[in-house]
Image 1 (spheres, rainbow, N blue to C red):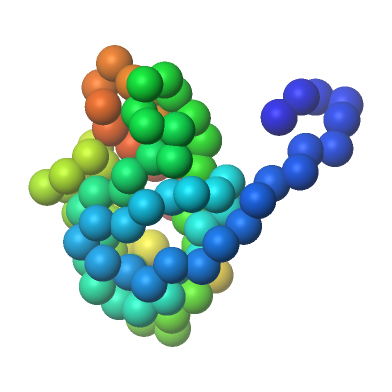
Image 2: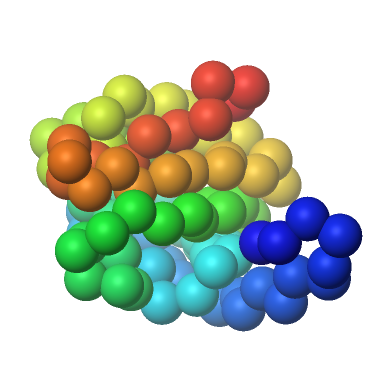
Length: 97
């Protein structure tokens, strides 16, 4: 994203699972299976951003047994802004959740 310009973000929908693949900038998540690992589309060789939006009424849980640093119970239709930190090999969730 470049300040002062319009950013074009790609979007996809994936079913929740222990491991999901984030192939777009915005990922809508269906289902209630806990997510413990998010495979970055860029291979994890550098940092990146991701917006994760649970669409199920029960929300979805992000666990810590994979590459998510701090787990959280994500509510329906609330965007989780996440950053992949290459040096940690983990996704960091915005503290505003």
